Image (cartoon, rainbow, N blue to C red):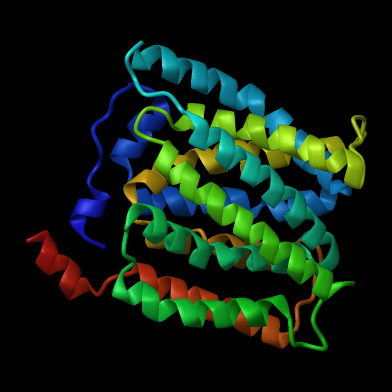
Length: 316
């Protein structure tokens, strides 16, 4: 990655999110956001609620954290500052579709593996960025893509008779479709979240995602507005970690990273989710699925970390 890609953008507001984005390496922000979001699948499974109920409350309970930040950000930016537009709303709608399908996948193939399947975004995001913005992915990324895809196939257990989960086929289909919607959301988030608008963008996307989740969830499995305890407690944890903190960090990082690097760093989410599924939920992926996770990690490192000598030479 060149030093140009990591240079802090001009700050148009004094919001805490913009200030954080200007002072912290964008790659570190993306990793921190991925760590927070990776807890989501565990919280989804522990809540024991339907997909529509889960996503609706995830978005609703995140708003008390996001709305004050968005208001502060807008007030400090001034009347002439940029505002999140249609990209944030459309991206949020795609996020709602992604989350509902992802919850379906979790129930069928397990919390960790379902998150791995959503990683098809690693191909979707740079491909869309090339088609619509003419942004060419790096050579290292192009080499790593087939390896990453192979790792995703192994991790999903598509051809593994000992794969974990009650319905791996259904879980794989819904997981991959969720990944396609997720890829569209990431691209729109990156294009529509400029300096000083991160909190506003995530807030608008969250409202749109909640509305879509309600529209899909009601006719599909229903939406339980009184899930009770402890389900409600797990939904609060999901909203704070996965929807508020995690996506604020990601929204601050993605505009400063190339599409391929941003998408690849977010692949850390499924790896951490698999480990949490094993330790916290007692899930038992097969050896081939674990091998797939290891392959994905290796590809992430190859695609995002440049040799030390090359980096030092550019810094000079």
